[in-house]
Every structure is written in structure tokens, then in C-alpha cells.
Image (cartoon, rainbow, N blue to C red; front, side, top):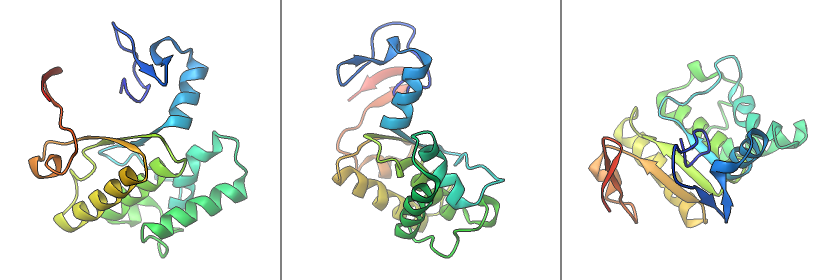
Length: 173
């Protein structure tokens, strides 16, 4: 939450590109979150009343992008993730793996510099887990910094750097 600008540290300083995130006002924090960070939540956090195109388009609306361009970009990413036949469905009409791909599309649609993924495979079967990890690895190859939280040693083993945290304390790098 601190890395994504959702929470402010109680002590110390959080610098991103030389700017003190912990000293940003609410408007600056909102801009930082919208322009810099993509979030993949464990529970997907999709909006049930919206179809998947509108779910993915949502973050682009805050950036001032026009409706037509938002929809085109969102549809393109959903197609890239193999969801071209599901565009007008709502989240409840999709499998867990499909919902996770929608959540990834929403997180990456604005080309974030940082992708925060909280247990992105925690609710998925092995096949969907592999597919999601493949997408995340590709994003990393394209230059996105990926911070992935997992309890799965197999998933952690494919990471470049592993930081172990126990009870809120750093216990190993």
C-alpha cells in the first residue's frame, strides 16, 4: 500500500524518481497512482455493474482520455489477453482466470511504470496461474517494474529478487 501511494509511511521517506511520495498532497498522490502504478488485487476488485471493457477503461477516464480512445485501447488489451469473445460480459459471467486477466488488463491499460500484484495467482488453477505469470514476465521484459506478493515458493523462484517479510519486518533478501 505504501509503494502504491495508498498509505503513507508513519516514519522515514519514500522517494520515487527523486520526489517524496510521502509529502505529496492528495491531488499529487492521485496523479502518482493514476500515472505511475498499476494494481492487481488478489480479489480482482472488478466493478460488477460494468462490463469488462468499461472495467478496463475506468483508469483511463481519470487521465482525461476521450471515451472512444479509452474503449479502443481497452478492447485491444483485452484481445491481447484472449478475452475478445467476452467483451460485453460482466465479471460474474467469467471464470476466475478470465477475471484475473481483466484485472491485469485494467492494471496495465495505462502503461504503469510499477505493477503491484498481490497474490495474482492465489485463486487460480495451475493452468491459469502459468498464463498469468507469463503475462507478468512479459510486462517485466518490456520495462515495467513488477512487485509481486506471493506465499507460493514456486512462483517466487522465478523472480529476479526475493525479499522475505514476516510479521511486517524484513527478514531476508
